[in-house]
Length: 445
Ligand SMILES: NC(=O)C1=CN([C@@H]2O[C@H](COP(=O)(O)OP(=O)(O)OC[C@H]3O[C@@H](n4cnc5c(N)ncnc54)[C@H](O)[C@@H]3O)[C@@H](O)[C@H]2O)C=CC1
Ligand SMILES: [Mg+2]
Ligand SMILES: [Mg+2]
Ligand SMILES: [Mg+2]
Ligand SMILES: [Zn+2]
Image (cartoon, rainbow, N blue to C red):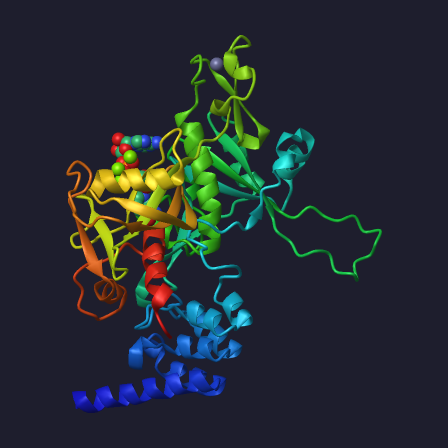
């Protein structure tokens, strides 16, 4: 009986994959209406229905699968996502649907959905008008944690977090407290006005977004979410990774600026009190004699810490160097990383940190992509680096173990159901994307 059930399932999967490859939307919908759990099932070489639809540029099929909640990030035996496949075959319209509009290299936390409009930060009258406008969006952060609502829309009941968007009335009492920090994030990006617009119609400002930060619990805001549960997640590293790409980009900006206010409330030059300026993008010292008020003083502006993160490739080209910190979950290995030091180039930082942490010497360094990492405000600069020596000697203060892994071992770690000798960090990290980038450099589809 179990066997019969299994083969009926397999037959349905075959039908689904075939329909997706042919662009038969009716058949795809009909199979999934009867058996929704088959949506991410794979056929030969790990191909899903989404990948087949993407391979052949079937826009409607890809849209239907995404609307039904398929996993857009799963990878096939060549470690390619549906996006990689549609990009390879030149289906730009499908790439856009799969959520990546631009070049490869867009990382989680990196999407810029707002226009920061930095020139408006000093325009008090404009900012004041935007603060009270009916369409203005406020994001509330308590102790650097954004207020989110949860729903159980994702497959497998995994809760999906969404930012709560509040209006001016809701946050007005909080804004009156002197300890509250307000940061102007920008305005929503809009399409250029259509030619049919009346020439005498004044263009309207798009909705503005602000972040409001408080060090209080702010639990009174958690009521009133209707059916959805509202909360301030306490584990920022894990929970922030479950936001959508759009919302993650806004959180990266807001959380880093709020974290700076939180840590730099006094002048770091003279220890005096400070005043918020420039829409929350500057803190000026209140002491008129303070040297920080003369010349260029970076202490007045939000800080960003550059960090290099590198996938070091063995001289044979077929292995890469990964390490694990003691705090990592068992079996997890990641790229080596380290803060850039003053007066150092990125290439030198890659060579120094690799040698310090693993004893391996690196020659050529190539930049790949970067990622804002708002814990609290690093900019991860992702590089590939070619090793010129191979002996490993780890710095035990920082790294528990470092090893060369073969391309096949790394590919298996990215595949569902394969035998794994290691796990890699989740897809939202640039470490994961660098590893995939290296695998993808030689993968054939
Ligand atoms: N998104 C991703 O995929 C990954 C992100 N990271 C992030 O990169 C950052 C740096 O990586 P690590 O290996 O820890 O750096 P690291 O190898 O330079 O060692 C960190 C240590 O260096 C010292 N240090 C030097 N300059 C510092 C600075 N500007 N700020 C803070 N500490 C400084 C501190 O003692 C600290 O404990 C971490 O904050 C981590 O969260 C690390 C790996 C992966
Ligand atoms: Mg390190
Ligand atoms: Mg370091
Ligand atoms: Mg280090
Ligand atoms: Zn000062």
